[in-house]
Length: 343
Image (cartoon, rainbow, N blue to C red; front, side):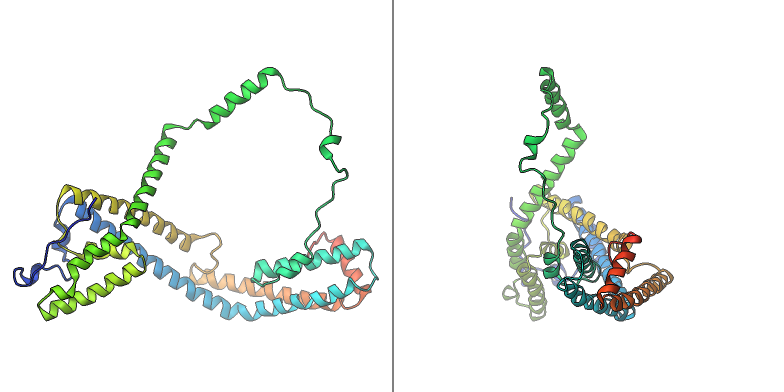
């Protein structure tokens, strides 16, 4: 299906006010078919949501920078102390002082310490994780299935009932089928639209080529517009091309063009849903520790700093305890008595 065609703009025949080079006014926006109006409204809503996402992401970056300025030094101290535990614990494994059970416990402490560094602080400790990964338990028998008692043979009707239960589970409600059909149609629309990026670019390029404009000022405007079109095409940014399409006032009103615009509008509505979800994630995400009111952020920062200071003090004591075998053995006993699996 061809894309909406633009009028041929010729400065010798068309008044400058009708050449569609500037952003359309509110009156222009209200003009056109319902499909054209819906298309432009969808563009405006997407643009508004994109700006909202950008603003929230900016706020989050600023909050993260503030967080790391205050928490970073304490976190670095904890990381350094945890890394310093590896050497004495690994040395303890070579002394022959500890029982095999105690050595396994030390290996577990090494592995859990590495996991903490990776998960909480993003440290690269893959080699240590691999070296001290818990060993999988070995089965007692080579063929466990052969050692297990055989269950009774199923009743002849059991397979029949299981088959019908499976078929009932496979049945879907009409609403589910309609939802899946709508999702497939939307996916097909998205694929067709992405494939049409080149066609949109060509249509815009024909309407805005500066070499076809005799008026120097209008040629300059078209040159700037053509640069925007080219950047959007090179970035494979269909949304930017559609935005440029919406800014143009010379959309031809016909049934074929309106059908294409309706497909564009549906794709833009899907993008609206995705952007709304992103806004919700940025505002209320469960794991978002960087957003919220100023007082809430300050309270969370104070709590995190207290916890990191306490952890650093505790790790200093552990660091001293792991230097001597007898002290390390006592530490292992205390950890076991407290039911504590990691340092």
